[in-house]
Image (cartoon, rainbow over all chains, first blue to last red; front, side, top):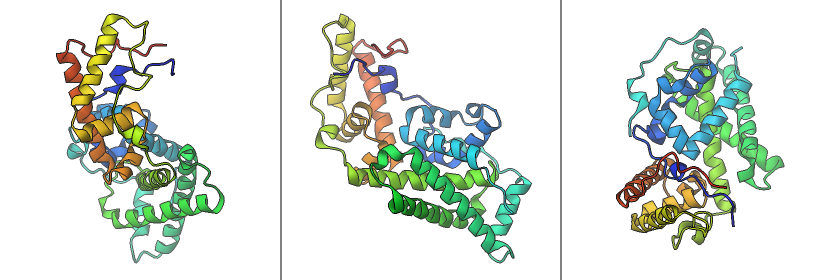
Length: 77
Length: 219
């Protein structure tokens, strides 16, 4: 048996203003760009910030995109 | 749910992004080499992202791993070219483009994980709280009552809400794997999960056991 009981507040995370997956997907690149610029994307995209805290699939995509943009950048020749 | 994208206006492209967009348009003298350059970047991102999600891929390696990366990059490239006019300049072009390959990898990894290890009947069905959540002898009376109320609330959810909540929240089934299993998509599954969580919070509050931020993990 696990010694740790999951946090009920996280288990039942459902916050008003959640943008949902589809809306978040549309602005994920802009959200990440703000993070890369050292800004707080939650000021511009509050619904996406809420969503990323609650949706494991979108959070994984966000983390991957942030890492890719940091690591690979990219310039046209 | 609210839509963050509804109020965001397009912005002027930075010079590098503008160059990508111009050179990717059909007829530009550097079109072919720019497509090849973008594809090369997308493959690198796909390989990196597949590596990041390796735990879900099991033993896949070598040519099969490379094929998956190539497929993700190719599929992303098709979407990027088709949606070039939809790039609004809210990010650098490459960040926008990488988003497509991340989504492709996400979908392909989910399908692969589902083929390799589809959710079991136990992970989808509801009989009782899993051991990690069940009341324990050392619990305070109100904790036991809260968990009992949670179990009652789960039993009262709609069949789809219960299936989704039990799989994702209680059994850690990845949301995209569950979407494949249920012939659905991430957004619809998330809506089921969101509604289930709202109903459970309301149920616990009505039973006199609201969930607060003080309900922290216990060791």
